[in-house]
Length: 298
Picture 1 (cartoon, one colour):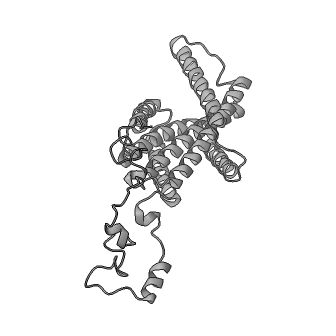
Picture 2 (cartoon, rainbow, N blue to C red; picture 1 turned 180 degrees about the vertical axis):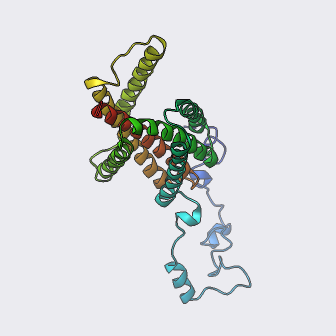
C-alpha cells in the first residue's frame, strides 16, 4: 500500500514496491555472472581490510583509540543547548533588572504617584504581549519588560508601604515562600503537570481574569464595589489568586524541564526566564493585596 505522504510515496522510498528505502527488493543474479563467483556481490570494498581507511593516512594506534573512547562527550554548553544553569542565570538577570527599576521608582517618585505607575504598567503589558506572540526570543524586549514592570511595582509598593509599613518585605517573603514550596512540591512529585491538571488550571485562571476585569470596569465606570478586594470575600479572592500564581509556576517548571530534555536552543532560556518572572510578579501583586486586606486599618 502506497503512503499518502508525498515524501514516503516517492520512488525508492518506504514503499512495499521498493522495499525498505529501496534496499529490500529481491534481485535474481544472472547465472554465471559475478554473483556466482564473488561471495561479496558487487561490493568493491568487501575484500579490502582497510576499505574505510583513506590512502596515505596511517591507521590509529590502540592508545589513540582508547583516548578517543574515554574522552568526554560534548555537553549542552558545547552544542549550544539550554541548561538549567542558563535558566537560572537569565532569570537572575531579569529579576535584578526588575528590582533595580523598582528601587529607582521607590526613591525617585513622590508618594502616591499612580500616574507613572499605571503608564509603565500598561506599556509593560503591551511589551509582554509582543514577547508572548513573537516567534523568536528577544532578550532586549524581556529586559525592557522587566524594567517597566519593576518601575510600576516599585511605585505601587511604595504607596502600600506608606499606608502599611513593612508590607513590602512581607510580600517579598511571601512570594519567595510560595516559589520555594512549589519547587519542592514539583521536584518531589507531589505535583504533576498532566493535561487534565493543565486544562482545569487554565479554565480557573480564565474565569478569575474575567471576573477581575468585570470588577475593574464596574468600579471605574459605574463606581460599584463588588467586594472582591475587601473583607472576607477579598481574602478568598486573594488566596485563589496566589494559588493560580503557584499553578503558573508549576507550568513553568514543567516547560523548562521538557525544553532541557528535548535539547532546546540556549536562547530559549530567556523565554523560560520571562515565564518565571511573569508568575512571580503575579504572586507578588496578589500577596500585596492579600496582606493589605488582612492588615486592614492597622
